[in-house]
Amino acid sequence: MEEMDHAEGSVPERGEEQQEAPLPLPPAFLEFLSENGLDPAVYSTAATIPRYIRLKPGMESQIAEIEGELKCGLEKVSWLPGFYAIPPEVQIAGSKTYQQGKIYGIDAASGAAILALDVRPGDHVLDLCAAPDMLGSTGSLTGVDVAKHRLSACRTMLQKYSLGDRTRLFVADGTLFSILPVNSNLRRMEGSIGLEENGSTFSEWTSRRSWKDRQKAKKLNATGSQHLLASSEPELIYYGKHSGLVGLCKSDVLCPAVDDEACTSGYDKVLVDAECTHDGSIKHIQKFEFWGWKTLDRRVLDAERTDNLLQLQLHLLTNGFRLLNTGGSLVYSTCSMTIAQNENVVQQFLSAQPSADLQKIDLSDSWPCRSGGIPKTLRFDPTTSQTSGLFVAKFSKLPT
Image (cartoon, rainbow, N blue to C red; front, side, top):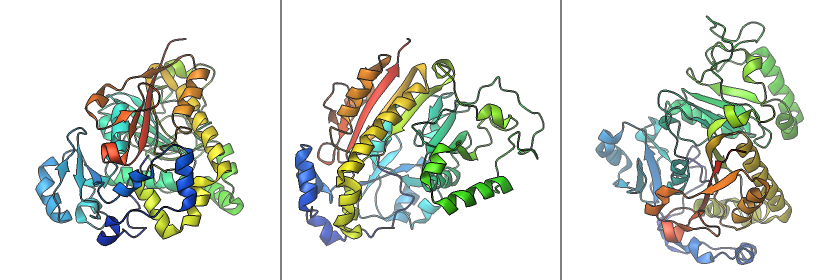
C-alpha cells in the first residue's frame, strides 16, 4: 500500500520538464514486467497522476485557507469522502497546514482499501491504516509491525493528528502476533496511574521508558538482530488513554490467544496491508532514479526475495484471518500489480481456509477500478484509476 507522506522530501521531486518525459525503465525491470504480463505503458502516466491528500475531520471549513497555504486548488475526490487531489508537483511537507496536522498525504487507492473495510463505531480493528478517526466513542485500533522505525513513524502520525486515543501499537512479527482486543471482563486495578513498581499494571502511557525497556533496547541494538526482536514477546510502544489498557494487569493484556478463542473474542475488522515489491507504486519506482537502478535489482527483482515475500504475504493473511471474529471482515491489499502476489496468494488462502468467503465490495460500483483476475477482487492502476496500483480483496469469516 502507498505509504503516508511522513517522509516526504527525502527524495528529490522530478522537475516539471523531467515529468513530461517517460520514466526510463531499465531492461531488467522491463523483463520483470513482461514475465508478469504487465504493460510498461502504465509508468508513462507518472506526470499526470495527482497527489492525494486527506483532510483531518473537521477541517472542511478551512479549505480556502489550506488552498492558499499550498498555493493550489483542492479538487474533491467524488468517490472517496474526505480526499482531495492536488497537482503532482505540489510538496506538502513544508507547508504550515501539513505541519499543523490539518492534512496528510495518502494515495486514493489506499484510502479505498480502508473504506472497503467498512469500520463501524465500536469495532476492534487490527492493523496500522484502519482509519482510527472512524472508530467513534468505542472500539479500538491495534497496529502491528516488525520494523520499529515504521511503527514509531505511525505513532508520531497518530499523535500529530490526535487519532491515537484508542490505539495500541505493538512491535511484533505479524505472522505470529496473537494478542486479542482488550476484554471488558479483564481485572482492572482501580486507581492505577502508571505501570506499578513491579511492572504488573498499565497506567497512562508516557514516552519515558523504564530501565528494563532501555536495557532490552540496548541488547537489540548491540546484536542488530531483527530475528531476536521477531521471536521475542511483542513490545508495546504506544497506547492511547482510552485504549482500555489503563489499570489492567500486564500479564492479562499480553496473554496470547489460545485455540479458537479469536473466533468469539477476536477483531471485528482486520486490514492486511502486506509487504510487497511495490511495483505498482509509480512514486516508489520513480525513486530508483535517485537511489540507482541497481537498488531496484535487490529490492524488486531478486528472485529469492520475491519467493520469501510470497510466503510472508500468505502467512500474514492466514494469521490475520485467525485473529478475526466469526462474521468479521478482512481486507488484503498490496501495491504490487503482479498476479503472484495477489490472485495467487488469494487462491492459496481460499484453498486452505474453508471458512473464508470472498466478498464483493459494494462501494466499488462507483470506484474508478477494474475487476481483478478472481471475481470480487479489485485492481486500481494509473491508467484506469489515476492512482498508484493497488490490489484489494475482502473476506468474511463463516461459522465452522
